[in-house]
Length: 370
Ligand SMILES: Cc1cc2nc3c(=O)[nH]c(=O)nc-3n(C[C@H](O)[C@H](O)[C@H](O)COP(=O)(O)O)c2cc1C
Image (cartoon, rainbow, N blue to C red):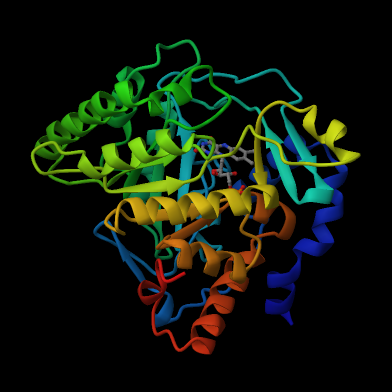
């Protein structure tokens, strides 16, 4: 009975959450997580769900996408939700308040969110303290892989400088680092995808990692988080640059596909109302596009670059489709807003059932099979 309530409380809580403005609801959720008011989920595990990627062992392929816990405040509570991995940030070198409010909008009919937060966060110093406390905490911890997502301050130039500062702060405190060049809410950030900037930018970051490997004696995988809004030719270039990245034999270890989109595909009467919000669109309307990008990237790189698939995952079937398209791991954000953290095990258990149906023994057999 207790476990039934633990796994199914969200339908009861959700109406209260959705009665609040989206950002207030988010802050209330962070408060509840920080203060141990959110029940942990069943620590369900299955050999079929285990994934090895970029040198790390994941107990399951379901991750929390970046942006949910920007300041790494809820590491303990989130690790109790049975995620295989959770990504924190985006953090920036200096604290910043982000764009004016309101800046998060729910499109309930579309199971979507539009946000234009603009990397509101408390800065990399505090962020790294939280990661450090968690890493060296002297208590029993659920098995979980931790990612640190880094970006740049709004006032900074669009180059590698801020990312290098963040790397200095977080290196060795997380299991992987994500280089976020794809938020649509920081002016010019997405310019870093341009072929004349990206190669040099990545080289600088990989060079920095070489220094940090020598200093800290640990190689932390580095992933690039990519926009869904690139033109085909731009996307092909990004894939080529990632594939050929190389500093002393070390490369970009993987990519995250995708961030939110600034494109709108709402039709008919709803179009006017839904299109009025500026910002990045996530959730259901992003699913097809991000899945297509995963498939394309997998083809362009012959499956040589591990992909974390994200965008509009609300079910095990959605996750399955992303994996078949070429992702070895998946993440979600908007799905948890609409369905709660019970979705983690719903996806995990559903994936096992789908693999059994299809005679597949492990996630790795599925990757890119679609
Ligand atoms: C409110 C909100 C804030 C976000 N903030 C970040 C962020 O700080 N850094 C980042 O890399 N992605 C951020 N994202 C993007 C998500 O990590 C994810 O890539 C995107 O929402 C698509 O997944 P979804 O459809 O499951 O939400 C944010 C998304 C939302 C909805």
